[in-house]
Image (cartoon, rainbow, N blue to C red; front, side, top):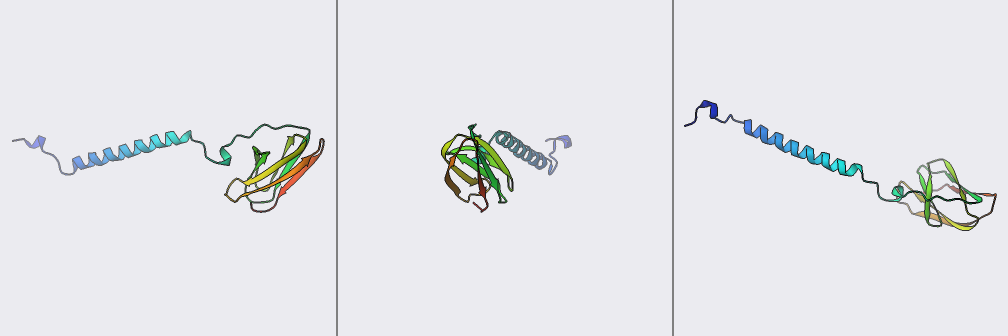
Amino acid sequence: MLGPAYRRRPGRAFRFARLGVSTVVGCLLLVALAFCAGCEEEGDDADDPVAISGDARLFVISMIAQRINVYFDGAFIGAVEAGGGRGWDVPVGEHTVEMRNAEIDAGAAEDTYTFVAGMTTTVTCDWAL
């Protein structure tokens, strides 16, 4: 027969078990956060802009409430903040400019423009893409 010092106190083992489960769950959450900290967001925002240069200029103006991603001949060249504008030096000639809403999946607007040396071609996005 065991003496009083060896008796299990009611509820004590349950508290340790609950603490153990909480600790395990907390550790799993920390591990998950550590893995996700290095993850990049998928989609257009995860693309790195392609360096572009030339003798003509493209200037895109956003008149909408969302950021716009700009593509030049299919390559992502950068973004224009909501209600802002941004310019790029681009090659001379006929090229396709595509604008996509960076914040919501709402399709894209695409058109072909002729870029002339020393001239700025301004494209305004004034609709919800």
